[in-house]
Picture 1 (cartoon, helix red, strand yellow):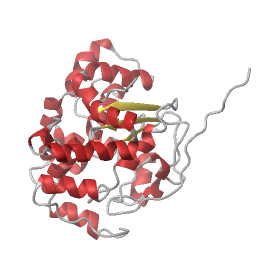
Picture 2 (cartoon, helix red, strand yellow; picture 1 turned 180 degrees about the vertical axis):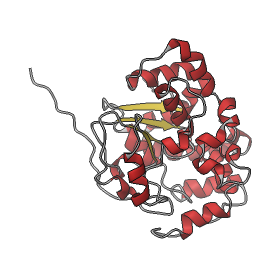
Picture 3 (cartoon, one colour; picture 1 turned 180 degrees about the horizontal axis):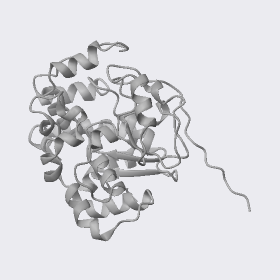
Picture 4 (cartoon, helix red, strand yellow; picture 1 turned 90 degrees about the vertical axis):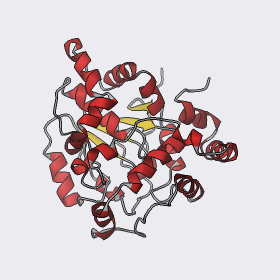
Length: 303
């Protein structure tokens, strides 16, 4: 009886901008139990990092999650600083990336968790992220040596204009959205890839946490289950935001609690017109196809 060999993704390009240096992954020494959390941005990254930290450390309090789970392809700090720090970690590593699959060195050893969110909700969250960013944030991204391409500028004056700029200019002022979603959707059937959705986490977080635990082969200590669930909830994460936000939130006015903002979906309903909503939905189907667009909007896989 013949078996079909798995075809693993291969890196075909690099991405560089005010945030990215995808070459950091080149030659990365993976461990057999590494976990890679991937998202576009503002899609639930910090939430999944918190969930995984709670599973690995069995509901422990006070975990410095942002420090423990670094964004590998972020340009700052430089790879000469970041990679030795990652190599020195002794716990099961859970790393973060915002790269599409074809710009990432993909390891059959690692387990990959992709968390997605409706693009309109992404924009509303990103607008808060961008409008509250302070001068320290701009200096780190724009003035640190090694940036490739134009600097990131100030956001549009209204979230509606921000939405149209993002939709019309390929993820402006951050990076392309559709190719990121499509690249991970296309590898969703690989045995070491798990697809999560922000809406599903909102609807039934305990069930989704258990699904993550099964995927990562982490047995749940039922005596710690209540603490795990509590520590992954929005209110707990908001109160303890300095532990899960990069550098404790120094890049944002209002600090870490500004970064962990509302955690809600659908705020765009009160701003976008029917024509604007149709514009987004038509673009979604055009860019990623009907089935992926349905999943992205709802968290449900169409039959």
